[in-house]
Length: 445
Image (cartoon, rainbow, N blue to C red; front, side, top):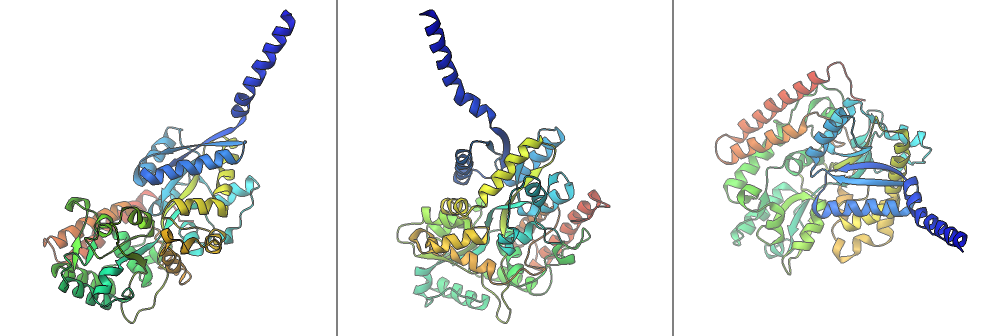
């Protein structure tokens, strides 16, 4: 009797231990990301879907709060030998990662782990941002977006516009008509360079910097204080002085997205990723949709620039973790994963297969997604040029801060717009020279 009891107890213990043993056999690896709030919640769901999809690997996903902090924390962790296996780095941090040399190139990782990747499947305007001068991707595009014009169709219809204005000349006419109709905020503006400067330059095929926007070398210099960009920013300031544009920033008490969603402002420029935010917070009956960014008459449209972030694999981790990272990247590139990501966020698919799946399933015709195809049309209207493929400039977070400070100085009357633009370029070039000095003797891949 005692023997049978002991045998039964042993079997029971073995049965209870089996799931634990199976869990222990899984190879764990860590992924740090820079999204929070609702988007951070979706990242956690993505990680859970990966973990539930197989039994070999388990990814631990940890938010670092925001993009700059994620990059800073990863650098600090690397110095302490505690870096994550995978880290999300925003678009303008690409040059920093490239020159650090502390990463495993995407192609090398997938080849070593014998994971099949159709590199041509990645949409060219997205792949180009994260690729070398030879077109080889070093990281995996993850959350991607581009800038669009959000317009209140009801408000514009009241002043005779059934379609969004396509030229800046027509935008000015529409804003004047809206103001005359009694709209206190025909268009919201903030001091974010991404939709107002960087995307403007991209769709007009204009350089932000020399050396093909930095792709050609670390000696690039900012050159955007001239020509059509200078003209445009003087127009912006003039429209602001006339009440056609209204500043909407956290400092004014309301950001542009909220001001558009509650009907205060009739239009704004922002990321397509804000589509879901506007949809979920729009006042009852708001008739709105995204449109392509306007052009100046007589110019030819080129593709808008991708924004967002990509996933980098860091050096110095145990070899087994790279098997997990490769499996994770392969999982993320599946059309089903892209569909989940795009459905639950405002971001766009990064592969042709993902995009085709969304189209085939009527994703863009669903009421909650109407208008989101504009972002894809804008990104894919042309193949990327040397000016529209992206920026390869170091320290660009600081340059964006300089832009914001100088725009504030101009809009508050402390400087002319010409003076502000010149200072942006002058101080921004100092940042670039410091970056060049830091990586003296190195070349961009």
